[in-house]
Amino acid sequence: MAKPRVAVIVGSNRRDSINRKLAQALVKLAADEFDARFVRIDNLPMFNQDDENDLPAEVVSFKNEIGNADGVLIVTPEHDRSIPAVLKNAVDWGARPYGKNCWAGKPGFITGTSPGAIGTALAQIHLRPIMTGLGMILLGGEAYITFKPNLIDSDGNIGDETTRKFLQDFIGRFADLVTRLSRPKEERSAA
Ligand SMILES: Cc1cc2nc3c(=O)[nH]c(=O)nc-3n(C[C@H](O)[C@H](O)[C@H](O)COP(=O)(O)O)c2cc1C
Image (tube, rainbow, N blue to C red; front, side, top):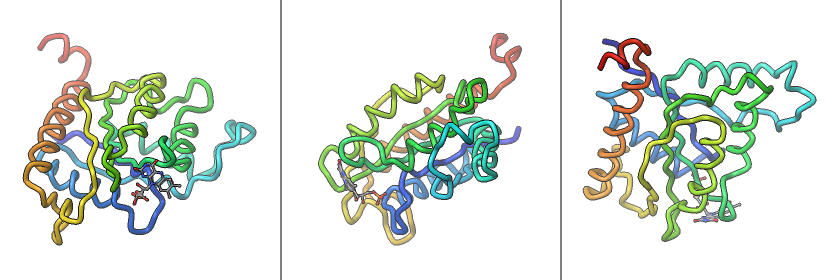
C-alpha cells in the first residue's frame, strides 16, 4: 500500500531557519511512515479578501498541495508570543474563500523550536484553536522544543537522543492518525 502523503509547512521565511532544520530532521524520522512534501508559504502574497475570488497562482498551488495531502505537519517559530505573520497569512489563504477551506478534515501535527526555554509553547497554543476552528484534527500532546546547538547534528538528524525518542513517538502517532483517516470511510467503519 502506498504511504500517506504529508504536506510540511515551516512557519518561517528565514534563510537559515532552525524550524526548517527541525522539520527536515522530522521528515527523516518519518521516512518509513509517510511521504513528506515541503510546501512553500514565503511566496504567498499578503492576504486580501478582494482577491479571494480570483486567486493568485501561488495561492492556487498552495491550496492544491494542502488539499491533496493526507495530513499536514506544521513546524513553527514563535514571534512575539504568537505565530509568525507569514504562517497566519498562509492559514488565511488556505481557509478562503468561504466553502474552499483546504484545512478541514486534515489530520495535523504542530511542533516548533526556539532558543527560549518555552520552545514555542505560546505560538503552538495560539495555533491550535485556529486550526481546530478550521476543522483540522490535531494530534494530542505537546511538543515544545528548545533549540540547543546539538539539537540537529551535522547529518541533519536529531542529535539529542532523548529528544529524538520523544519526537519519534509523536511521528509514529501522527503517522497512525494520518493512515487511519486517509483510509476510505467504508474501510474505517469495518475496522
Ligand atoms: C519578530 C521576532 C519575534 C520573536 N519572538 C519570540 C518569542 O516570542 N519567543 C521566542 O521564544 N523567540 C522569539 N523570537 C526568536 C526566535 O525564536 C528565533 O529568531 C528563531 O530562530 C526563529 O525561528 P526560525 O529560525 O525558524 O525563523 C523572535 C524572533 C523574531 C524575529
